[in-house]
Length: 323
Image 1 (tube, rainbow, N blue to C red):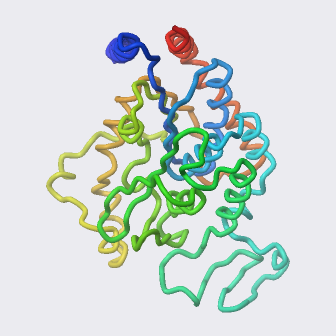
Image 2: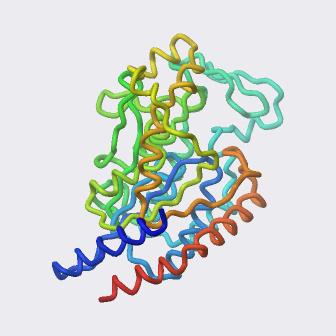
């Protein structure tokens, strides 16, 4: 497998050099909640290696990291953001003014110690609106004059999934904060996002490591940072029992059916082996909900160490981009 990857990498670079241009490099950032801090650590090493990035694609937390990096924030700035941000309050829409209240109802929303647990104003499933995340991303992107996809310094895409049809949706136009919010709308936790009449949820439901999207954008070489720890074999029954829509599954309370069929696994496995430079930080002791400042610092370090493992490949790529 390593030999095959090296051959693919070499052929791609030789092809680009033959037509008088350096290889176009795509960066893919997978989903994984708080473990996205490791992506920041890996980015620090990629920056240190001097790798030029031409395209960025992200899913879920990867969409957050990717959008900010594409807008012009450095890995060091993202490091500070991840370590200083109160992520628990941010992601849960916690009302800090009610943090001392065991139980409080305000305008149809029930809070327990400031955390919203029931919203009578919305019939859709998913407690959290994710409004604070969207506001923070909007503010940060506005500071770089990069709120719209067309204004990003590096071309950027993020992946969501359509609720009714269970189809992957690649978001490439409109406002980036809303697209990122859709990409991270974890079913049952965050409310769906309506974009162009489509009810969108977390892109990880269909494509958690969108290497193929980076290829479609024009990337010759893809660097993928994968946060997923457990690897699963592709299941034949996925072809025999296709999922026709998330609404059918969750509407009937049959989440177990989704877990059993996992239509995303085939694409994940294909994308994982398709990446030219694959970085998979070992994070067995961390969960998607490990949002603590100390945990963030440790995961950033783990991400750096994982990227340093492929340092020779990064240097080889750097050398070919300079020719």
